[in-house]
Length: 242
Image (tube, rainbow, N blue to C red; front, side, top):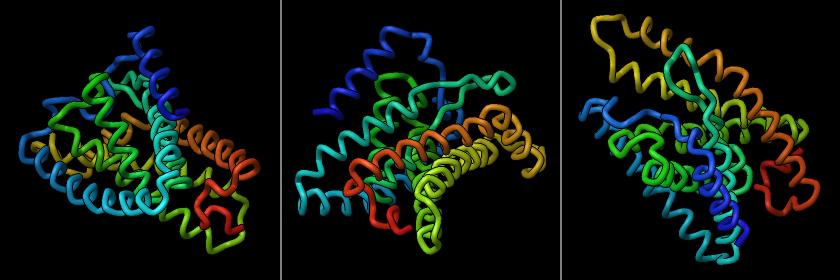
């Protein structure tokens, strides 16, 4: 119920403040059909594997359905707030999937990220149907994988959970936008050298994404630390291996 309530309030917020409905993610029509299909195929394969794992987990422990809904709503709140990137002519936003990794694990975070992006595409005009595959790969899949790998590596050494969560939040954010820049470069590359165009797109995101990634790391660390103090049983075992 809490997850559904947060999700409903998020939609209400967007309705009351329509100025939030700026373009986010890769918009409809930006990617050529060949690249759009390529990212859709990657998304479907990864999502199928993640859904299988999540379905098994929820079947073994049905009580986790409420937790899954809550975390999905939380990721939605993270990623629905657009921050303008003036020199890029677009907007940036936090991704929130690191929180999903700490609570739901890799597969759960991927599925939650997909649901969030699908809702944003269908109801909020953030992104597009053709570019959904690319957006899911960048944020839900690569963002989650980068955060999960960081968590696995950091769990092998003795560091505070705040530091773990900060690094995971930071990397999830920066990895998402590095991949988005790569996707745009592959799609838009003409006669310009690949590396030169990729660097230009990265630099377009940098003024907003560098500080935003740090901010997301701080917010993720604060939230996960608070959960560890109050309800540590909600976190993945690797998160608590200090």
